[in-house]
Image (tube, rainbow over all chains, first blue to last red; front, side, top):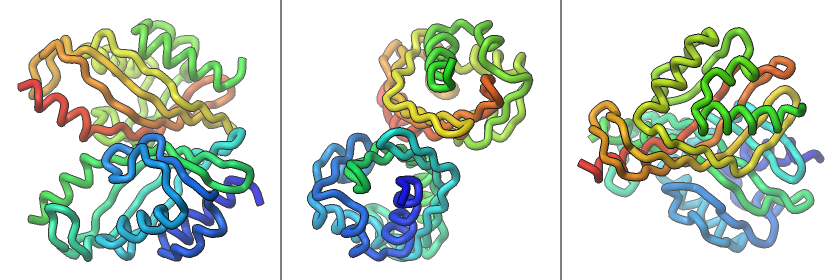
Length: 138
Length: 138
């Protein structure tokens, strides 16, 4: 399966559907977060178990979250994706109790592969837009 | 010249060095900004003259700005780049008078080509980080 398809399936199954055990099919033994401002795991090397915990904790405030990939580019061992994200703010987020409002976000990620396994990423999300939406809920 | 090289040269000459007339060598007759939250020209179709004005106005508060490309991926007629940006806040920015502080930002952009000409982009920058840095200067 080509890397573009692997990345698309990983995003859908793990991040959108919350099928956390699917990480076993897509991730390498360890995963490095090269750049991800605002992510609590930024600059960390994660074991697969730690990555699964990151997904679980990240999805908890927005359990119905969906990533809609816009553009997916594959070049060498990297895959870049631009995405739109939506999620209902159904769980507490630090400083922002659950509001049941729909929150939107956009971002772009470069994923690094080792063979057919994802082993890291470099990501930017439009955090300011999320903060503004959360502030309007309180 | 391949699109990866064209994009790298465009970023360097136009955005980093401020050689605005170099737009004539890289851009199509019109340029569409598909997605660029916070950019005053977001969602607009720009003539080349309007694009040049956008560069001039965008660079004015940070005249020594530099984009350091991190990863450049080419696939089909699109090129994705992740980047780190630095600029001295030497001119006024709405709400933030010139502070002469160095500001940093990171982001990712997908550029769309028509042949060997750049005709649009989809971009995310970490605006929250910039806002926090500017707020700390006043």
